[in-house]
Length: 261
Image (cartoon, rainbow, N blue to C red; front, side, top):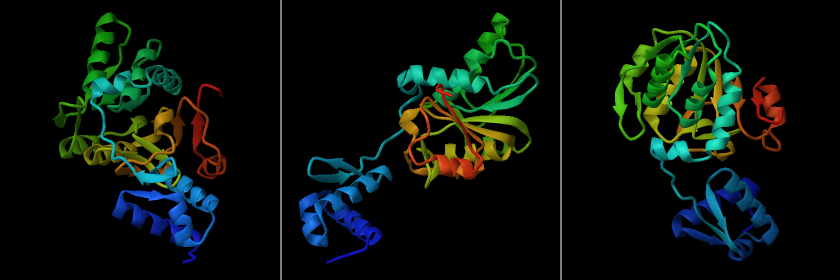
């Protein structure tokens, strides 16, 4: 049974969904191609987050869930701090900005001491508390606007129709959004549909949309689509763009900022 590449990959995924695991040698015999061809197919499918390669074959991709906020804060903490520093450098005096609820976006707040006359909107309870604390210390003297809505106690954020309605009344210079996945094919994605829908509102209300994402989010797709890459303007990460991304980023006029710039 000789099939073209994309048709063969689809058949591999059908077999994987049926059996939970596929063996490279068996696939080679079934599709009448070399094991090297099968390995390339499995490599491609793994890059698309459709399966997980194991010794001799592949297994179904494990469904991930979003960790709680306090867990997220401790994951890749140093990378997130670097991203926060770089992202803060994009903020200018008198800007009106949105800082969303992600643990990476939260790091931006630590680097705003010398910024003047900012207005910051946020849907994040930890970000709100940090801004209030810096305001009490006298190191932040801007305006703070908390976006109300349904509270998610696990992730310490608000979202839902109320929050989306509030954002319809604002226009901001820059929005800083954390995401759970960034890929060429699928754009930016989230684990949570409500969060994805709210983030789309942030993007529509912003002159400039800035995605903050550490290396673990790059070349990754999660369940809920937020937007295509053409809908954002800047990605701030702790790594350089993946190999093969440069032409697409250039064609989209999408700027990529990292510590090696």
